[in-house]
Length: 353
Ligand code: DAH
Image 1 (cartoon, rainbow, N blue to C red):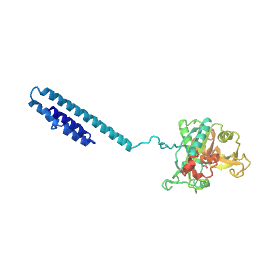
Image 2 (spheres, rainbow, N blue to C red):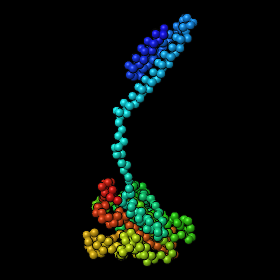
Image 3 (cartoon, helix red, strand yellow):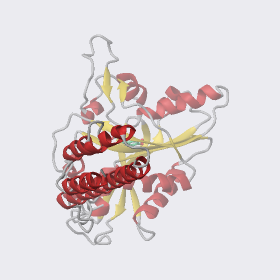
Image 4 (cartoon, rainbow, N blue to C red):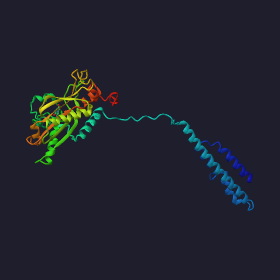
């Protein structure tokens, strides 16, 4: 009987080495440790043995069982380890490969300029006022002293949103300039204190739209930064001082500026502001078209009709306003020769800022 147990043990251990996968391992377990395996049948036979044989055979049978269980556990762990090693070998991960770079976005060149403009005017006490991009004809033109059919509208061919007949003389359109925000802002201030409305000192940035032939110099969508100061005793001197200082802060302390008479329906008097060409220092070059000067904005004293439309009594209040194109200013600052780059989404352009 003891000899038989030795054989059972040897045979089982020998065949364990041939089990090379999980299924074979399970078959081995059933064959050698299962209920009807030779070993288990030996336990069944213990009862029928002579009393004095029983302890020795029983002990040996238990030893064999433990030995087989231990061998099974060790072999099964070894198989598992081998499987992991094989998988690691097959799915090799090279941690020395460089990672995929995460592309960093950056500010659009117009936004870089806008931020500089905001910072300069913030230091001078101007707040940013945002106004809608869809306007009525009334706000975009009429309240700014452009009557219907006024020829000054010719300069601002518009994208109308409704046909114009549904709303009579007041069709909806995409704003052609940021100036209608002047009326919104003044009316909001007047609502705070109708008898004695507070002074206004704001800049109004935002997108404008015109039905333009797209060329190197004109786009159908562009930004403007409007400015408005309304209060008591504001003079043309304040306008000149503020805007000349703005130009020095943006273009350099040595930059000189000049004001030329012009016309806008919503200002009187009106002017165009030029700065001395910072490329040639005023001597004349291709950037300034040999004039020595670069036009940067339009401005003027707020027209009394516009003050009244905003709710400010033109006999007690005066004010000045200005409007500039940050894309145009960016073009001057960086000598960009074609405004179409701004909306072309070309990374070769955008990545330079
Ligand atoms: N709204 C004018 C335009 O788009 C620009 C402008 C000129 C705005 C003079 C002003 C101003 O506030 O005073 O052509």
